[in-house]
Image 1: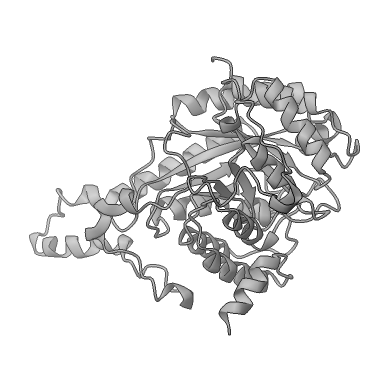
Image 2: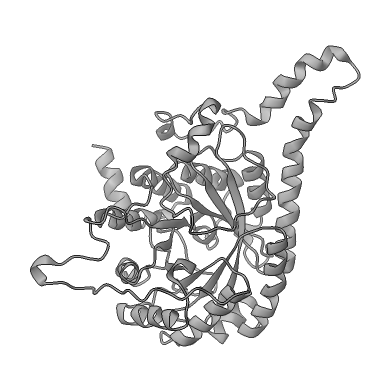
Amino acid sequence: MAAPRLASRRIAPLCRQAQRRQFSVSTGRASEKARIVEVGPRDGLQNEKTTIPLETKIELIERLARTGITDIEGGSFVAPKWVPQMADSAEVLNRILGHPPQANHHINYNFLVPNLKGFQNFLKASKEANSESKQPEDALPTPPPSPKQAPEFPASNTSTQDPNEMPSRPAWKEPTPPPSPKEAPEYPASNTSTQDPNEMPSRPAWQNASPSSSPAFNTEISIFAAATEAFSKANTNCSIAESMDRFRPIVELAKKENVRVRGYVSVALGCPYEGPDVDPVKVAEVTRTLLEMGADEVSVADTTGMGTVPRTKELLKALSAAGIANQDLALHFHDTYGQALVNTLIGLEHGIRTFDSSVGGLGGCPYSKGATGNVATEDLVHMLHSLGVDTGIDVQRMAEIGTWISKELGRPNDSRAGKATFARMQT
C-alpha cells in the first residue's frame, strides 16, 4: 500500500491579540465541519459492572441514530471472559442489520475485533443476519402449495419492516416521526452529516441495503494497538510488534470483504504502567504502521486522560513529521483530569476534524485503573457549535439521551453541557 498522504502543515496560532482572541475555527468560517464518532454503546458501556440488558443497548443505539450522529460504535467481538459486558455484541449487530435504527441520514456502525477469530465471528454474524433478512423477500416469487395462502404473503413480508417494530419509543421522538418510505429518495439531500463525502472513499458493500424507511448504513470494524509495551501486554497479551502481526491478516481479509477498518492507538498521552511521558515518536510509528497496512483511519487515544496542552502539541507535531495526513486521523480524549476539551481545541488548531466522544461522558478502560469516561458528546458538541463548527448533531436530543442512559445505569451524568441543556429544556 502506498505511504500515507503528507499532512498539511498549516497550524493556526492559538492566541491572537488579547482583546481580539479567536481560533482558526472561529464563527466567521461557517464552512468548518467536524465529524463526531459516538463511542458510548461500546467504549462507554464496556466498563460497567452491572450487566446491561440487550434491549437497553439497542434502545441507546436507536436513540443516538436520531440525533444526526453519523458514526456509532456498536460493540466488540471480544472473548466474554475478558469483557463480559460485550458478550451480546453479535445480537446487537443482528438487530442493527435486521431492523436498522430509523434515521434520516447515513450511519456507520463500528465493531471492535481484537483478532482474526473476532473478525471471522463478525463476518459470520453479519452474513447470517443478511441472509435472514432476505428470506421474506425471496419467498414472494415462490408461494407455498396452497394458492389460498398467497394473498397473505405481502402482509407477512412487511412485518419485519413495521415502523412500530420497536414499541419502547421515548416520548421525545414522538414529535418528529421518521419520514415515510415515499421520502426515501430525499435522504441524500437532507443528510446533515458533517463529514466530507470525499473524506472516506472506501465503504463496505457486502451488507444489505437498509429498509425503505431508513437510508443506507454500513458496518465496519476497528482494531486496537498500544503506544507502550506494558499496556500492549496488559491489554492484548502480546508485544506491539506481535499485535501488528495479528492485525495484518485481519486488514487483508477486510479489504477482500470490502469492510472499512478503523485503527486505534491507546495510551498515546499517558500510560497507567509507564507513566505520562509516552514517546510521541513511538505513537506516530504505530499510527503510520496501521495506515500502511491498510487502515482507513486511526484514532489516537488519550486512554488515561493524562494528556496536557504541551504534550498534545508535541504528539500532533510528531504525527505530522511522520507524514501522516490530518484526514487520516481522529482524536480520542478521556476527561480524567478535565483536559479533554482544551486538548480538542489543540487538535482543531492543528487541522484535525474527527473526534471521538461518549454520550453522558460514559466510559473508562478495564485495563487503565482510575481512567474516567470519554469526553461527553454533549460537551464536545456544545463547544464546537459555540466556535461555529457544524457537527450535524441535535445537542438537545443528545442531552435527553445522556439523562436517560445515566438513569438507566444508575450513575451520575458526567456532561456539564448535557445537564444544563436538559434543565433548560424543562423550564
